[in-house]
Length: 187
Ligand code: DGI
Ligand code: FE
Ligand code: FE
Ligand code: FE
Image (tube, rainbow, N blue to C red; front, side):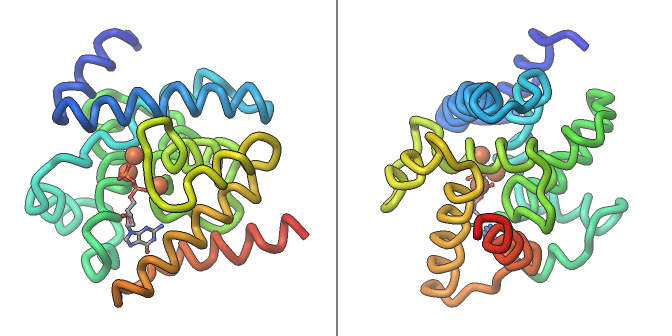
């Protein structure tokens, strides 16, 4: 796999602002992998590809969810969740990415899941705290991320869940499972 070609292919899927976010997630994920003993190459690759289809038109993603082997349940939840599953499917198909750990980290980077792997956690947390992110509570999550991966991620999910409730939106079941599971691991 040629890194430069993959970088260019990814960059071409999205506007400049989203690309800057992806670069932030790549740097942060590699940093977190160093800090918490994760695989830096896998963190790099999963972070680079995590938002591959984020800027795609909704109907393009919907078509793949309907026609391919992707969870139909996604269609009943916030469209923001779709790009993670669709992205994992597309990078396997278009770029031959076949590392299941990397594909899982892409697939679950938005929702999380029960028993998240170290790589899942690293990519998901990097997505919350990359330098370009600015939302209430982000600095507290950054501080927690200095020494506790699970506590930081839990704070991230807690914030997202509160926001979804305030907005009257549904919560994807995997996010609830991820949050409950993290709570068990930190006590
Ligand atoms: O793609 P990004 O913007 O970088 O970030 P992301 O993939 O983490 O998407 C986060 C968005 O997804 C955020 O605005 C909240 C929204 N969302 C909608 N339903 C859910 C959800 N996030 C989670 N974790 N769980 C949900 O059920
Ligand atoms: Fe995303
Ligand atoms: Fe996220
Ligand atoms: Fe992202």
